[in-house]
Image (cartoon, rainbow, N blue to C red):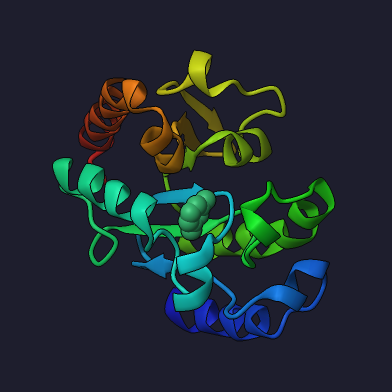
Length: 189
Ligand code: URA
C-alpha cells in the first residue's frame, strides 16, 4: 500500500546526509498530501518557514499557493500531493546546485513511483527545468501540458516569483484554470 511505502521512504529521507544541504537543516521537508493523489505539485526546495516546520509551502508563497488551489477545488488535505526537488533548505534560499538536485531527485522519483500521479505541476523554473526540459522557460511555456511516461507535466510561475512580480498573477490564474479543465477532461477528481 502506498502509505506504508511512502512512510518507509520518508523515514529513510529524514536521516539523509547524501549532500551538503543536510548540515544546515532544521527539518527535512519530505512532502505532504494524499498518497493516492492524481495531481502532484513540485517546488524547488524548502525556504525558512518550511525548514522550521518540516512542511512544504507553509510560508507566504504557500498561502498564495493554497489560495490558488482552493479556487480550483484542490487542497493539500484532500486531493493533491506537494513535494520539492530538494528536501533540505539551501542556505539563504539560493538555487539548489545541480549536484544537490541530482542527489535528491531519487527521493522524488520514488515518491512519483508510489503515488502514480497523472498530472505533475512544476512550480517555477528549477522544477520545470529538472522535470520537463533543461531549457524550459516559464514566461514562454507556462500552462502547456507535455506528456512523458504516462504523466502530464505542466510548468507555471513559482508563487514566490508571483509575490515579487504581481503582474504575472493573471497568467498564473489562467494556468490554474487550464489545470482545472485538464482535471475534468481526465476525470481525476
Ligand atoms: N518554495 C519552494 O519551492 N518550496 C517550498 O516548499 C517553499 C517555497
